[in-house]
Every structure is written in C-alpha cells, then in structure tokens.
Image (spheres, rainbow, N blue to C red):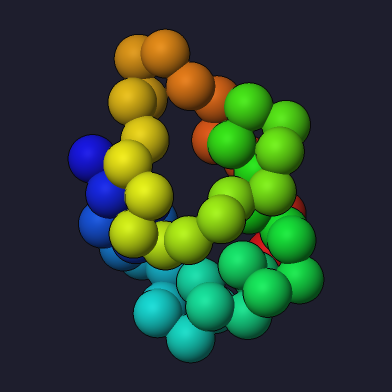
Length: 51
C-alpha cells in the first residue's frame, strides 16, 4: 500500500504528510521515508509517524 494512502486512512492531512516527510518525521523501519508514493508492506515493515 502506498504511504500516502496509509496515512490518509489515519486522518492525516496531505499538508501534514508533506511537512513531516520534509522534516524526516516519517520513519519506515527506522529510516526516514523517501517519498509519499513509496510502497509499504504493513505486515513486514514498521511505520512511525512523529508529526
């Protein structure tokens, strides 16, 4: 599932997503996310949104 769609399901606004991405506050397996379009496997990867 795309990262932006996953965060949208959690009621996070598109603006907040973009700001958090630029600040490095979205972590996938402990590493900053590269893009809101990157695919995430929720069964295998850990997602942390600090924004």
